[in-house]
Amino acid sequence: MAEMKVISSDSHILEPPDLWLSRMDPKWGDRTPRVIASQDYDHWFVDGEQMGIIGTFGASAGMRFENPGDIVREGRYEDVRKGGFDPHARMEDLELDGVNTDLLYPSFAMEMFAVPDTQLLQAVFSTYNDWLVEYCGAYPDRLKGIAMIILDQGIEEGIAEMRRSAKMGLVGGMISVWPRPGETYDQPMYEPFWAAAQELQFPLSLHQVTNRTAPKQPDSDTVVISQSGAGRVNADYWVRMCLCHMIYSGVFERYPELKVLNVENDLAWLPYFLNRLDVTYIERPTQTTYRFKDGMLPSDIMRRNVFHSFQEDGLGIRDRDIIGVDTLMWGSDYPHAESTFPKSREILDSILEGVPEDEKAKIVGGNCAKLYHLS
Image (tube, helix red, strand yellow):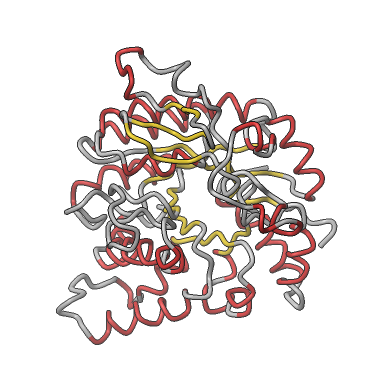
């Protein structure tokens, strides 16, 4: 695998503490996202409420291999890995890790999907997208950004931001892994958005920790995923529900070139899920009333339109033929605590042992390059 081009389909930046304060319209006042230092740690405030903590969870790549006991939620910006927010330091870490290209998602900003005010989020996300373009511009061949898109209370605004992001050079968009309460992605209101994404060839990501609901109790159904152990174990619940709604309502038949990504939920659950999709479709036509053309099954749609970003799922690799080799894309999750950095090549060699070379090339970079039209 030494000569293969390795692309991380799921890496992250760490938002600078002044990202929004220095760029957003002053009219937003104290509602603007900001970092406030307490006696013990730094934390994010949005819309006047505390939402996130600056801890080593978010930017301690490599610590799991050396001092896992030092990984904590509470921390300060001066203690996090510099490559999370400095593109030049990131290049050094990419070289150390043997990774050619990073596809970049946010860190704390993902949790802001839980902010109720859509207009505030539109301003926050567009500001983030502008900054991300600048960040990637330092190394445009090696850093590729994923835009943040909010959809509710105005699909046209979401389409406009997607078009603007694509024009600026961002290669894909991230929407919430679950819409706001009372809505699902099988509803007609989303049709213009799917159509525009297909037209732009703009892949859409469903990344964990992006639920469009505010966190309540640690183990409630409305908690932002990963805020509890049980929530983290079952994080794939939300993406499974969204994919079911999209597939069973015929979204991918109406928009056959639309590409959607399941991000950071790993793979091993997919063979069972694919089987359940088909069994339910065949045995419960009154519950899955949409009928596909040409005898296609839901699993066929999944293998054509849905891609999967994973980190270390050896079980999923074992079942790659069931899932679809052409849909699998590795990601390092740098600079987060669970990242494979700085042992990504070593880990890939281990979990891909025995996999044919042509399939390895697809999984470690080829599929991602094709999806995002990377050279």
